[in-house]
Amino acid sequence: MIMNDTTASASASVSSSSKKSFKKQLKTCPKEEANLLSRLTYWWANSLFTFGYRNTLTEDDLWELRPEERAEVASKQLEINWKKEFHKEGNPKKFFPENWKGDARLLFTVWKILVSTYGWAFFTETALSLCSTLVSFAHPQLLK
Image (cartoon, rainbow, N blue to C red):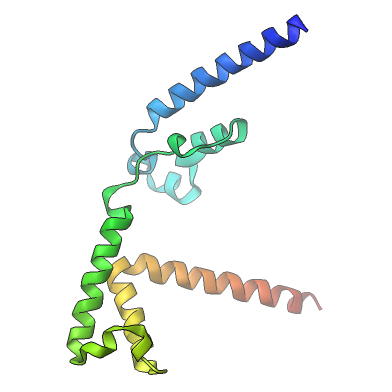
C-alpha cells in the first residue's frame, strides 16, 4: 500500500511538473516559427500531440490564438463584407436570409462574401473536403 501511494505521488509530481513546463513553452503557437515542411506535415504540433497522448488536455494546455484567427476579428470582417455586398444589391430587405425565397443569385453572393472574408483558405478547404467525399464515395465503386 505504501509503495502504491509513493508511486502515485511521484508520478503526480512528475506529470504536474511536465504540465507546468509544457504550459510555459506554449505561450505562442509554434506554427508561427515552423518552416514549410513542418507546416505541411504538422510536425510543429508534435509536442502537443505527445502531451495529449500522455495527459488529458485542457483549454489551459493550448497556445494562444493568433489575432487574425480570433472569432471577434473574423466575425467583424464577415459582417463588414456582408453589409458591403448587400448594400451593392440596392435592396436592404435582401440583407436577411429569411427574405431570400430561393434566389440562386443570392447563394452565389454568400459564397462570394465567404471567399472575400476568409480568403482562399475557405475555397481550398471546401475543395479538399469535396475531393475527400468524392474519393470516399468512389472507392467502393472502384473495388467492384
